[in-house]
Every structure is written in structure tokens, then in C-alpha cells.
Image 1 (cartoon, rainbow, N blue to C red):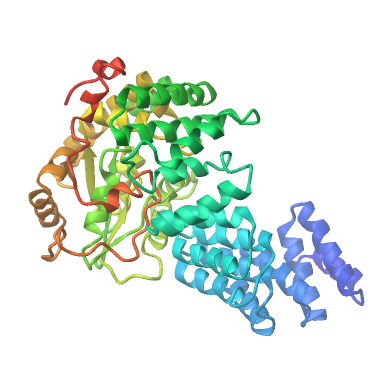
Image 2: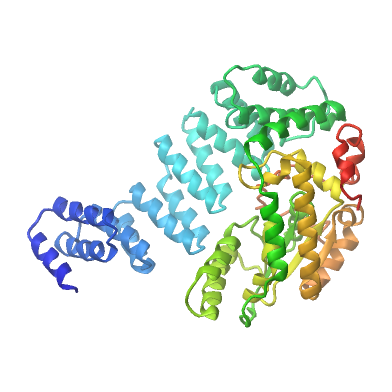
Length: 520
């Protein structure tokens, strides 16, 4: 131990438990992790039964990378007191970092095994489970609190969102209707828009239409909530075939969002050209011999969700949804200072635990984050056996579908202006053409139009390319654990149809900007 640390421990010798904790807190504020760890180790020696000291030490150990000792401390704490919320959530975050999502969910569920709980604590737990991809567990937690008598609109709103994503649409509507009836914030939470994603409207007298219009008349409505309601009305009128009205609402909605979220079109084009011209350092890792990563990429709204859901019907395939990890991994590799291969190995291991996790014996694992097409060269450095499925759709249909959606802020900011959409589509196609020329054996392009008009032939060819064991993907039941968090949460669960093929023709007269895009 360093002499300054020894002197500090000597000064604290004989001090109270609070003295040790206050000293550790001061060192945290000074950003001195080594000294903080030394003090907390000394505190634990002095007060081995202190829950506060053990919890603080576990937090510092986790930050310093000693996750094994942190986990041991936290599990011992929970063995003494299973109702310790802080220890539970810290342990769950530790397990999440390691890709042990099932274990994290098990720990959180144990905390809420009976009775009602503070709504703030429940929401923190729900958000953690949601981040872990354990949406069924998160929904069950909400439902347990509602059954125990909770009338907090936030819990009902979370329940509605989560139930929608796991396909329980009727109960989701019940929860969202409760929020509409009980909270003036329902439009700000985009609850009306959520309702439109639960069904296909067939009757213009449906009460949702009146509700949308009534919400629009509220004087306290934010611009974001107004745009959300207009997107909802656009979708509802599109369901009815009222294309002129749908276009009018959608144009107003897109104008609102576009004014608030400008997309850097020039920066996008530069990034595409940079990727085309760059050459990563030589060398790649060995391919894993017991599993295959599958990346479903392409423009959003090009069929990525539908295709991933169909493939996930195979018993050897696990679909993880749209993982956020690859851009982080790419940045860590680019900015690292140690040996390039070491960086690759570290990144591959970190990504693999998030993709494989601890709840599946599958051999093919799907990450369907569409924008992973930006990282194809890096993917094949990390996993030479990776299979990359490129989804492509008619540009006009793809553009219209993007323009009709309200996306989470900061995710698809190009989707509210046709010039931006056109640039995004053009850039993605240019880059994918480059990747296909460089890595032809690793990439397979699937056309949305073929997938919907002849799904059997399309899926058979794709399964053969992936080297999947024979399995009837069309007649197989959908994965019971299927989670869909994208705008396709309802559509992707319906029978395959061709209604969206050449859909743009219904809108051409009302949205002439579509004609500026290629009809391919």
C-alpha cells in the first residue's frame, strides 16, 4: 500500500463507521479511486458487518473493474437482507454489463416478489429490465404493481408500452386507456400514438379519431406531442385509405419534427465516402467455431424486422433485436492505444456476451440494428464467419414508410424530410454496393418485394446460405418470446401481405416529392 494511503488509514483508525464513509465520499468527489478503494477496504476490516460500507465498496470495485469481488459482496449483502433495493439494482447493473440478462432479471424479480412498492423504485427497476431486453419481466413487474393497487399513470404507461412490444395488444390498450383517462400528460408520453400501433383501423367512427382531435385542441400541448398526435392521425387515415387526409396530417407532423431536429446531410455523405476509402489495419480474429453472428442491416423500414422475426422461428436461431453495442465497440477500437489485435479481441468478447447472453443455446444469433451496415468491415474483422443480410426495398416505398413514422428523438432524424431521406437511401446503397464488392461471400441481399410476394422461396434460399438445418419457417409458430420494439411491432406479427408493395402510388399525387426518388 502507498504511504499516503497508510497515513490516511492510520488517521481513520478508531474512527466511527460514519467517519470512514464520509472520507470515502470525499475521495470519490476528488476522483481518487485508488485511495477510495483503500479506505473502503480499511472500513470493511473495521466494520465487517456494515451494509453501507459493503455496498459502497461493491460500487467502487465495479467501477475499478473487479466485478467478481463486487458480485460476491453484493450477493452476500442480499443473502443477509433480500429487500435491499440499492444492492439489488447495483448487482443487476453488474450482471447486465456481463451480458447475464437472465441472471439480472432473476435478481430484480426477487426484490419485488410480494406486496406493493414505491413507484419510483419500481420505475427504476422497470427501466433497468427494459435496458436488459427483459421486457416480459418488466411488463410482469408493472402488472404485479397494478394488481397490488397501483394507480400511478407512469406504471400504466410503461405497462402499455411493454405489453405492446411483447404482443399483448388488448391488455396494452387497457393500460394506455387508463393513462388517457387519468393523466393530462398522456399526449406528452405519446400514448395516443401508441394506441395506433395496436391495430389496423377499419371504421372512421372509431372513438380514437375523436380522442386524437380532442387532444389536438388542448392549449397546453407541446410541439412534440402535437407532432405525435398528427402522426397518429396520419396512420389511422392511411388504414382507412384516406390518403389525402393522411398526407395532410403527416406533412404537418414531419414539418414540426424537422424544424426541431436538423439532420447533418453533408456529414452523412462524408462519413459514407470515408468508409468507402478507408482500410482497417491488417489482421482479423479467428472465427468462433460454435456459433454464428447474423447481422440484418439496411435502411429502417426495409423489412429488417419482418425478416428477423421469420428467421427467429427456427429453433437454432435467437433474435436479440436492435442492439446498441456495435457503434460503441467501433469507437473503442478506433480510439484505443494498445495493440490493434488486443483491441479487437477485447471488443469481440464484449460484443459477444451482449449478443449471446445467458438464456439461449442457439447457434445463430441475430442483431437487427439496421445501421450496422456502416460497420461491415469491422464486423468481419471481429467475426470472420459473420453472416450479413442486407434488406433492400423500393426507394419510394421505403421513403414513404420512413416519412410516416414517428421515431425516438435522435435515432432517425433524416426521416422527416424527403431530401434527407433520399440522401440517406443513396448513401446506404452506395456503401452496401462497396461492401458487396469487397465481401461477396459474407453478404446476402434480400428484397422486401420478394420476401412478401414469394416468402417460401426467399426464406429457403436464405436458410441455405446461412447453413441452417432444415425447418419450415412459414408454418412454424412465431417465437413465443418474441419482442418487437420497432414501429413494426403490430405489422410484423400479422400474416405476410403485399399491401405495402408500391404503396407509394397511393400518395404520389399528394406527396409529389416521392417522384424525385428512383422507382426501384
